Length: 413
Picture (spheres, rainbow, N blue to C red):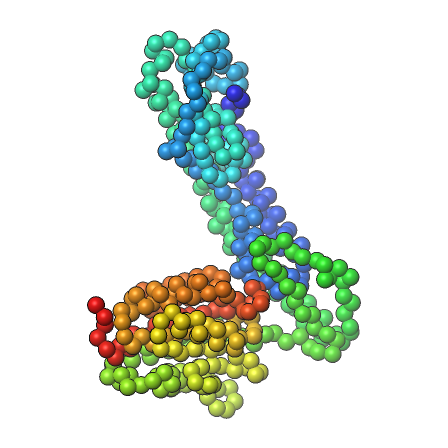
């Protein structure tokens, strides 16, 4: 049996955590520019946080297993259980305590620690603790169990101090790395604009086609570089504040319509959409001429910039889960630019709204282009999701799902 070692006494945990942060910053600085620009910020951040955060161990005391009782001598490195003597032939009881997390944390001293560091044999995924004793009194089961419990309590106390340092690191890591990514992307975009405005042709790296950044599981595609005869133009996007303003107008219009069921009872999809257009255009005005919010086809509400749709709200009457699949398919065919803002407005004309909303949200999460659920506002008010464009997981699409309970028949019981 391997000897137990003194825990939480080597190095300072703060130095280990600082080294992790510095490694994350180097990773950002060394990331191939084209790949970094082509990769969604959230994916870059998720990768870096998963690589450089630290997972503090958690003991599973409810899963402890005991080895068969045996005889053995107390190793010199270990702390004797029952006395200062170390005779041979003592009774030995060893337990294995499973844990989740990173084993190296047991080695490092937290910013706060105690005067009596614990002993244990650290294995991958488990700690082993051993009791040595002899004689009738030493073999009392209650005393042995208390001995193990006291040692585990001591280990968990030290882990709590380590966890406090680690939690601070993990929290600040996300914020600091997010800032580093944003800062480097801003520099790269400025360099791209300067590069394009000089008018010279740009020499390509000979290994550009073979270079791949190890972000898993998503495939990262090379960003298109500007040519000598064109000027770099930022992709047109709807500012986040205006996106929220537009959604707030839709929300207020939705609430007004829900309070007046007689107004919408005889209206079809297109006429409800036109009412929403009136509300939107009462709040926003065009930069040149015409209305900012326009109708295209049968159900779309959109903002168009330079012949590109930067905001689309798709309107659908709920007719089962297929409604969601059809709406998302339409949205994805319209969208070409990264970070495009969208909304899915679903009109519920009959049935139980709560049940229908749950089915609709589940259908969105099961779509092959679904990436993650962003936030959920007040219950039944709005649900935010992130999708990706067809064929490109790095082109992210914000989707606000807003249900309209426009019941034209009594709710089903």
